[in-house]
Image (cartoon, rainbow over all chains, first blue to last red; front, top):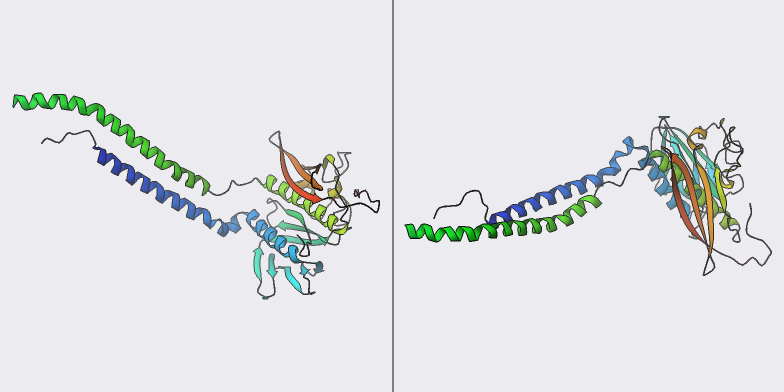
Length: 150
Length: 178
């Protein structure tokens, strides 16, 4: 029999479609994998470091009962009068220390860090972070102590 | 031989429309099978990068909510009241009062002004804070904090919501401290 040229068989089309779907699946998986690596780009986007400050502070103030302003930082005191976490500026980088005494780098390349209590509310901590690069936005927000309530 | 050619001609005419139909069917299957992949691709993309202004507005809204939580913790009867859009820093070119939640929070215990040592003034000058409140059933009180700013002439708003319990004010406190 003479093979007809210029036409694909139905099986051929289905095979082609299958290969296309497989390639697209691979691209989707690659995209998903790349999107998971966003945490490693802290140096390039200051807001990623700010998000870490937000996450850690919110977690610590949820169980904290008292703030204690210390030199170059703040301590969040827990129920047993022991520090739940201590935030300290060392060499223009903000570190978080917990009970394990192992410092965790939260954000670096900071020009100035300010931890202050609200003038009326002693259970509210005002946090200001100024990055080295003055063109970047500063960080300013507050954290209220929950003391394990909510 | 002639018979063979004669018999192939009608078969070809019959097969031609069938192939187009098959092609369309394959394209339909391909399109349907691609939709989940497009969906996966879309949701796996990095979240939309907020502008720095939008991010700072979110931090300010967070500050207001946390201030409300702190004040509620000190005085359980406290309920914030509604307010118009008010500036968050004290500017020499504006007579509008600074929002309650941003008063006296400067390093010197005053409002944030142009001389603020933390250099926040120019970053915060563009923002305004507005509070909306609603009484809800079940002794709940809803607070919505709006932080607004202008972006290329368009008014943009970031908002946070929080539900607060309404406590009994039997001691005569009206709950509004400001």
